[in-house]
Each structure stands twice: as structure tokens, then as C-alpha cells.
Length: 304
Image (cartoon, rainbow, N blue to C red; front, side, top):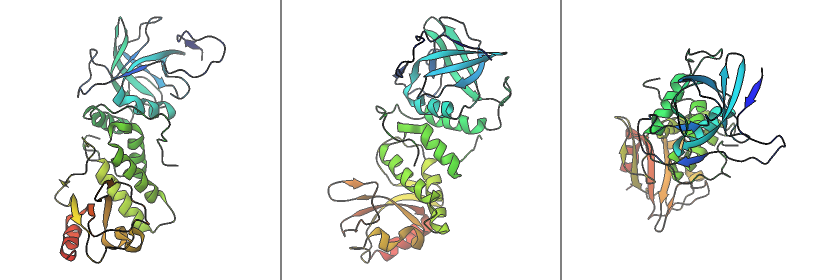
């Protein structure tokens, strides 16, 4: 299958260059006037509905249009900063997508992305529900802060919830910095626990349940606030029980013994969102707890 490259790159192999600029947007709905991304259309006008795959973004920031038996490569010129990680994930996994866009003077403005079936055409994939869920979450997020390119993204439908380890991991990679930094740090640590073979099955289940709850929250800021997640689960502040003071998190084994997760600790000077197992609790610490309301109430009753 021939590939036509419209990137204007020289034939000599050159160092990787990012072809796009990222712009900030807080819009909750995408249109040709405020697109997800803009592709180069100087050499060819693209169809309203076009199929293809995003390139591996660490090698080429482009999209490969598939038209009959030919493939045309077009550079990404502009992209909503909230979608950088999603496009990267789509490219790394070579996921076939259906773009909806409009040809304009400054490029092909893409305002909708759907996952289509492997054999191409306009038939949607059964996995499109996950992609639409992620996009809906990104559209309801605020524009992220500047991306840290050296950061490792991995840890080494209509009512869809993130419950499986794979869906949680994929969502964290796609969401990038649209999630607050402290939430992402906490999630990655718990993802490692949920995948570990060195902890008990019960602790892995607790970690996975906590991850599912936390990633299904639409975070808007960098602070842990008291949140009633449902009739059964909450995130609350709680004083350190007197018999916990001076003991490390490892000694207390809180997740296994009490069925709750410590997602942060507020000390006198700062909030620790990634406390190590060797952290010893101080009487003046404030625990940021996620768990079942029944278990939280039990802890409240024992703290005296």
C-alpha cells in the first residue's frame, strides 16, 4: 500500500520535530470553529468523514488517512492541550478512528473522533464507548498546565465506569494533566499495588476499588475536599486515632485491616499526597480518607 507523505520533510532522516502547537480551551463541545485538532490540508482536501490512524506521536506527529488502497500522511498543526495524551495513546495503540472535520483555510478542523471497526469504513467499533467516555471527561476538564515531556505516562458506554485495571490505566494515560498532579501521583502508586503480586489479593482488590472511585470523579482542582461520592462512599478529613500516633503506615496496614485508603496526609506545613509506607503518623496530622461510609464511621468512633 503506497503512503503519500505531505509533511514536506526532507528525504534525509532528521531529529524528531513536533509539528503542532497546543492551544488552551475550556469548551465542553467541539465544533469546526473550536476543534479538537487541525490537520494540514494544503496538498489535499480531506473528506468530511475520514478514516485512518494517528502515527506514533514520539516518531511523527501526524495522522494517516486511509482512502481505498492508498494512505496519505498529514501533520497535526494545532491541538487542544487537553487531547495531547489521548492522541498519543491512540497512536501508540494504532487504533483505527473515524474523524469528522471540515476543510478550512488554516487546515482540516477535526471536531469529532470515533473508534471504528478494524476493517475500516464508517462502522463503529464495539470499543468506541470507552473512547467517547474519555473524550467526554476531557471536554469537561479544565485546560492542563504545561506538559512535562519527561514524565512516564505508564506505571513501569453511556453510563460507563472505570472498573478494570486496563481501563483505569488507559484513562490515566489519556487524561494526562487534565487530572490534578496529586491525584495522578496517588493513582499511579495505587495502580502499582493493584498490579503487584507481592501483596495480598485483598489488598489488590482494595487498591482497585479505590482507583475506580477516584478516577470516576471529575476533578476540578488540586485539593482534596470532603466529597460524598455516593450513598456508600466518601472522601473525608479525619484526625489521627490516638492509638495510631507514632506508628508507620506499614505497621498499621490500614487498607487490609480497615478497608479504607489514606489518599493524603495534611501535616503542619504541607500535604503529603504520596506518603511512603515508612511514614510515621503524628498526633496533629489530618488524614484524607477514601472509603465506605460504614468503615469511615467506625474509624471516627475509635479515634478517641
